[in-house]
Structure formats: C-alpha cells, structure tokens
Length: 254
Figure 1 (cartoon, rainbow, N blue to C red):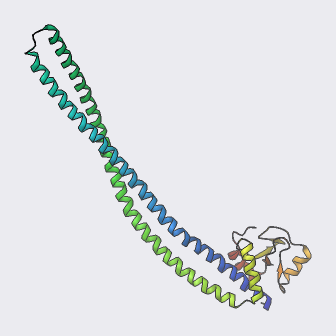
Figure 2 (figure 1 turned 90 degrees about the vertical axis):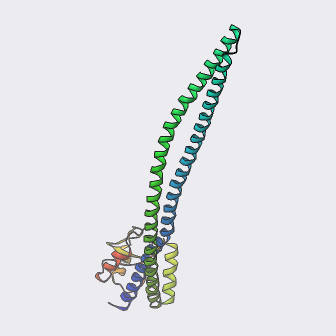
C-alpha cells in the first residue's frame, strides 16, 4: 500500500467512523422519544379510565336521583290514597284516582329507567375493571421498558464516546487541509464526503466518471473528486479498499 493509499484508507475509515457515530446518535435521540411514547400511551389509558369513572359516577348519581323520585312518588301516592277516604263528591274522587294513576305511571317510568341505568352501571363497572387492569399492566410494562431503554442509552453513550475518540485518532492522522475538505463535504453532501467508484460509476451520485479520469483514479496516486457530486473518490475495486468501501458507504445517496 503506497502512501496515498494509506491516506485514502484513513479517509474511508474516518467516514465509516462518522457513519457509525450518526447511527449511534440517532439511537440516542430515539431514547427520549420512545420513553415519551410509553408515557403518552399510559396517559391515554389513564385518561380513558378517568373518563369512564366520571361517566359511571354520573350515571350512579342519576340512578340515586331517580330512586329518590320513586320514593317521592310512593309518598304522594300514599297521601292521595288517604285523601280518598275523606272525599265526598264523585268529581273529586275521580280527580284523585286520576292523580294516583298519573303518579303511578311516572313511578313506573322511573323504575324502568332505573333498571336501564343498573344495566349500564354494570357494563361500565366491568369496563372500569378492564381499564384498571390494562393500566396497571401497562405501568409495569412501561416501567420495565423505560429501564431497558435507559440501559440501552447508557451503552450507546459509551459507544459514542469510544467512536469520538476513534474519530479524533483518524483526524490527527490526516493533513489539516484534507481534513477541512472532508469536513466541508460531510456538511454539504448529506454526511458522505468519500465515495467509491465501481465500474466507472460514482456510487454516491451514480454518474459515470470520464474514462481518462477513471484511468487516473485506478492508479491510486493522487486525490481526486467526482466531477458531478464533488465528493472525494477512490477506486472501489481496489482490493485494499473493497471491504472498507462496502462498510462505509452503505446507504449513500446524493
């Protein structure tokens, strides 16, 4: 491996390191998002449980009110029946009977409504139990998952620290001017500054390299850039670079 090939391999290794750094950073950034999603899911279930409890309590209040109304109807019916014994005229007697019938009808309607509410209460109480069990289970699962994510984040952070030290090692091994060019391209070319050329085609922009330029590239004795995307290019079919190229440039795009 000549001196230029050695320099080129450092650049490829640096890009591979930067690619791995981006991937680890992405995973670290996903950690809080995953935890927030767990908490959002718990909040939604808890809110559903609270709404169900409020609905259940409202129906129970309505049932109690209807039961009170039924008691009132019964009291009024009893009073009306007592009045019957003191009524002298037939007209007043018929009016009292009508009042008793109307009170009885209202009582009957209220009793039917109470039965309906009792069925609704039973349904909501079952649903409340299910929601409570679901929330408790989700809380346990979320707690375990959050701890798992936190451990993963700790591992990722340690990996990131190691990769940044590795990156610093590569940076120190590259000429300042070349490093500045590399960093500039990384910033402006989607995180990929170095691209292999395979069978005469740049693997980043997928454009063909002019034959003369490609022949010069195959000599691997000077720094060259793609005439289309301006990335630093190297002969990807060079056996010394092939494995590194496959690892470093997976997923590259213009």
